[in-house]
Length: 259
Image (tube, rainbow, N blue to C red; front, side, top):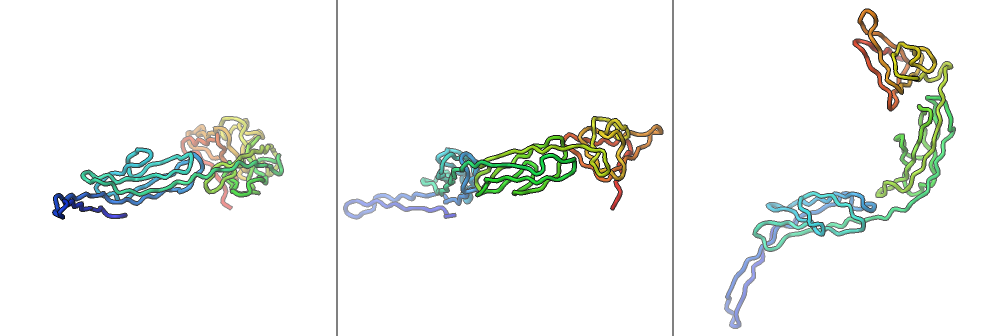
């Protein structure tokens, strides 16, 4: 930051006699930063100006006021922050350029292996074509290949190719099917809303036991018993899906054995 400056202007006649004296002042010169300094077209960058003591910041070419603003340039743009102080003839200023990077479009090929598994089993996800970026998956995984578990009859996985300044270079999707089962080791899943203790709530027509991994995709309630006290359910492990809800009535609880 440069401090406020003053300039003294002296005027003389033809004989060298001073006929006037004028002192002109400038406001402080601010410091300006951009975060980030480079963006994809129309993506945001935050401009911050500091050091305008006793004044206010005016931005050009936007004609906006404030020490901090957000810009969305479509092309590389230079911004000027002027420090406006009442009574100063000249405004101190600083410039900052935000560079716009044109993002190429890539074609992603997305596959899964296998494409049909039982609930709880894992699949490998692959995305090719993102040569100068990073693959980000809708499941939260990053990179290719990556491994994820399947809970759902049909799960859509979307891969997005991203780079430092380009959030979406291209996308691709793949669908993985999930099968239910009632054999030992299969994940026990809900069939409909209902009571934990009601066999019809579960696809396999039975209550979970302490050896079952349980997947909840409906609203399941543990009700009080006839005496008005809480009931207990059992499971080895519980996974709640996006639409799954567990409601505990009174002092009801689920007991999960400690390994």
